[in-house]
Length: 263
Image (cartoon, rainbow, N blue to C red; front, top):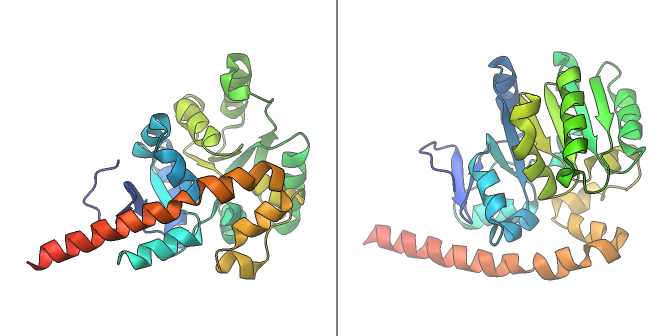
């Protein structure tokens, strides 16, 4: 999807992953803001990989991303199995915990867009408890189906133009958040946009994050499923199970390339 000779990228499942840890990602954010460009970051997890198999619009969004990072231990493990190891899981849900102090120190202007009514405001309140000088210039919970409502989209774009954030965090779920960013980021002109899924729910306390041990061992999905079984059972038990088939095919392709190179 994304052609580059940059050795910092690893191609797996037809996606070019930037081999970034959080320090590298901060460097990309810093540079983009300093250069006053408009770009967006994708945090790719197994759910994204499944959707990319059949969603051509989502593929197009991926092909134009400024950076694609691995959000999930299964992708990190796959990169090691395929002898192209990625440095670190870079999860959207971890961005504020890992980079919040840096955002605060740099005085970056932040905007939180997404989740249900009242959640972004509570997330901002908790962020300011953790980072008292963090510069949040706005937050907004969009109406249901907002992505198809031109009036609502215009209102959001105007809000972003007025507040002039450096970074826009969009938490409305994939692939809606990534598609919305792609369709509008040139209009609202923020240097960095990034889809962060349920991050505002975690920050606000509306949804409890999995314990560290479950995150590190790749079982965060099980925690999420246990908390929201009616909403997430199909994603985790049916859709994401296809990843094992995808990984097997990728491993066979990798071995065939390796054997071909040895001849």
